[in-house]
Amino acid sequence: MISAGLALARVEDIPDAGARLADAAGASLILTRRGDAVRAFRNRCTHADYPLQRADGRLIVQEGRYLVCAMHGASYRLDDGACAGGPCNGGALEPIAIIVRDGVIFTA
Ligand code: FES
Image (cartoon, rainbow, N blue to C red; front, side, top):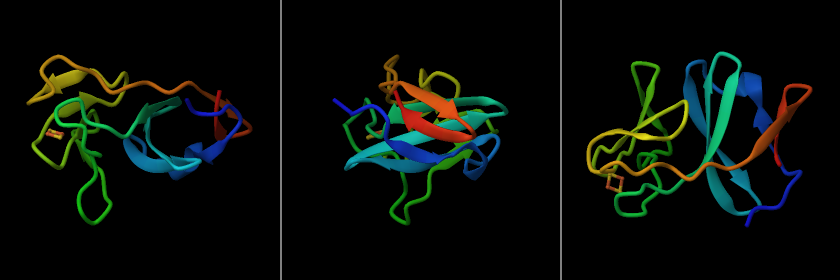
């Protein structure tokens, strides 16, 4: 359970289209953005429960549409976290409720 009201990042600090990591009181999240659409997901791959970033901390975004797990290549849609290919096998990233106020993203 993630508490509401935690500031995560500014919308403008997320690449468009792209993704970045955020910390919610010790829980690792992924924030994704395509234009004005911002989403948050728990940073856990459905394949083997690893975080998605590379060893250097960077997230892999392909074609401005897909978030790719650095471990074995599972691919998720930026828009809704749904599996788009690879070993996620129809799973989806766990969505986290957020709100945006004055350009700042908060847990909801
Ligand atoms: S842990 Fe992400 S693809 Fe295997």
